[in-house]
Length: 354
Ligand SMILES: [Mn+2]
Image (cartoon, rainbow, N blue to C red; front, side, top):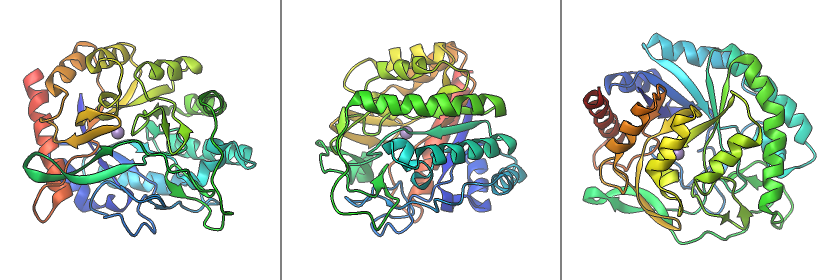
């Protein structure tokens, strides 16, 4: 197993690549969407939480990520002795009508196919995504982790409807008419996923990219009045079986899976790692389950992380683990300290396993 660090777009700098290397990481997962654009309530030094208006503004709908810029990022990562393992998430500006089944669906599908070709050509092996209307919504923040470290969680259901012009918790059209997007059924959302996978997977296979699906965060059956796809562990299997392909894999989030109300986290890890369907892993811990849970330090939540690592090893998992999120530590560099703590823990844990 390999140790990686996920970096938000504005953190894709030489200093942060060196920080990753210094903390023992060998791989980088890059978020190339700017989640923080125009989001006044978001600290850029923590994972985004946002407000009813979401994290902020989506990017430019007319500019997909080019081969040149992706190749440049990969070279910068490699120049610090690291490997760029994955890009994480589409920009809502590029695929809102794929999620919403809107009039630009086919145009956007052609655009993101081009983007996946660029990802493959740039030598980036995995593309993580999260097929969701509400996205990450309903997060609360507080001193929930050990020693009063600030962390995020959920404190009851989130039912506020999603306004027009917003999807995946970002605004893609500031001039959208008033009102909310209509609620749909789970079945219709699965139909939309099937369309997406039918179209994207052959392209991903052709260019050697694995598409890796994140489960719903938070994993509730409905969020903001809209259905979720993967809110119980067995629904990951439904996603894999929907369109069988070597490129149909999982962005396996231990935290989100542990927040689900059904299943056993160790059986879940065993089942999907034995199938060799894990693209890469978000390795974080949590206390509680939806709709009431709190993210914790890696060694204080409900999940026995050593036991998870042992199962992954038994099943021959050789991919990357990243800490996903961590609580903010009380110092001048709260995000970095939290990540350094998680990476140090993981590095020692992997050593013990060997
Ligand atoms: Mn995650």
